[in-house]
Image (tube, rainbow, N blue to C red; front, side):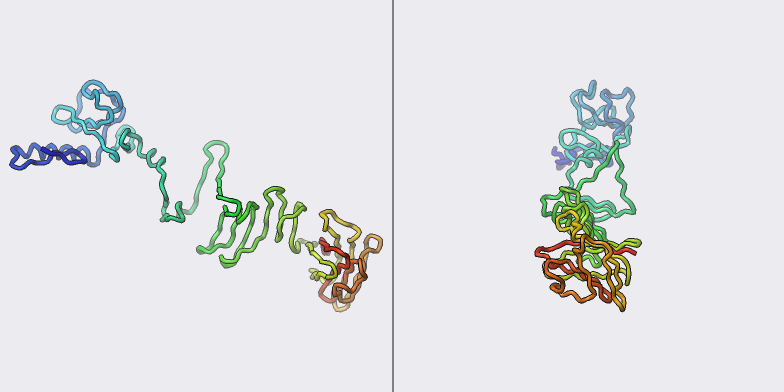
Length: 338
């Protein structure tokens, strides 16, 4: 008589007598193993009054009629105990703990642990994962709760020139991105079409200096362009030698201040407080400077209009210009008041 390879069910031989015995034996075994359940997985000695069909998953070192059968399934049938040796992948429901147990080829363990410890290539939760999005979740909300005092989510990139970021999308088109994008400085970017992203803010990883519309510099805050708040409009501008920078004041008339910050420290000798009018009849009055080092005019400044070596400010209809006749480039911080 031969047996099946997986469940070791007896096969009928040709011209076998009492075939019903072999068939009934196989059906009883199937009745035990298909949708298998056992009473307990820690009972080490047989119960005194078992009922037909009672089954146990035997722990290591069982005694009495179960001696030497650790790890097997013990089934009470026809007045005695029959044993089934499990194969790798078998799963049974343990009634005493209300959980599935899984046999990995050497030992039994809760199936939940086997699933938890498995190294899966991908996982989809109410969504379909793929080879790129190996973890995919479709949900109204996602909760990460600290098991003790703290919780931290880590995004690790493979190199300095790589990216570790959060991308915020609308209909699968990017609208904002924050993170380490292409280098190790922390960046905030936005996009109106998902293709072209514009950088709004960058924080240097070494100094923690901030750049808004510009790379972080020696200053704690470096702003590339104007800053507007209630009553104050400020910014900075770089002016090369023998050139003039154009500024558009927020109001037709008011006060303007500026100073040279090329070295990282304010240079008062190249600064002034000015009253201006850029209306149809332009005017400009220097209120405060350091010994007359800043010239003012209503002429158009070409870059070489003022005296050599001077800083000149002009007011004309709709515009203000700062001209640099010094030998080196200047970075001016400026602000409009009123």
